[in-house]
Amino acid sequence: MCIVEIKGSHELTPSCTAKIKEGMEVTTSSPQIEASRKMILSMMFSERSHTCSTCVANGDCELQSKSVELELEHSQVPYLNQRFEIDASHKNFVNDPNRCILCTRCIRVCDEIEGAHALDLAGRGLNMRIIHDMDEPWADSQSCTSCGKCVYVCPTGALYEKDISEEEVIKKREIITELIKNRGGR
Image (cartoon, rainbow, N blue to C red; front, side, top):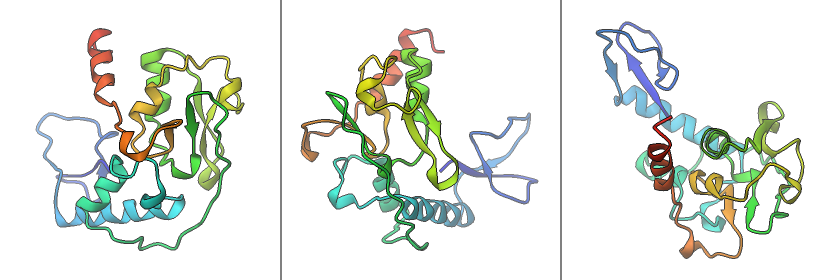
């Protein structure tokens, strides 16, 4: 949801890919930006199963918070009802690709912070999903250290701890900031 307006450009730009230039003027909030964010969010909800009332991350979900912020009460786009198999093979964690928004935070924290590179993307388009090793069940992963960092940074209920109730789900995202600081800011 990193869409911004850059003065002189005729289209909205993802801030995460924009090259910074001297004297650049960037607008982070406007009616056009908010309408675009709402449409993007609506498309995210339509692609996967994001029924908040049945999700383990209900109440601690960035997607849910953003939908409240943007006053999105229902998707403006028809639902695709894509279904993926849930991987509950790991002793501590579950991967529910039906709730994944493909932000790749889990992949990056596993690679850049933990150094394990146990996660990756597979598939294309609507079939894209997060996989473990070479698309093995999570329990069979040879490179997963079971550290849980991927679970802590997941903005939705796609990755979660087993045997814990909705009330117990509190994502520990602040731990990642601490890890980066202690590793020299890389």
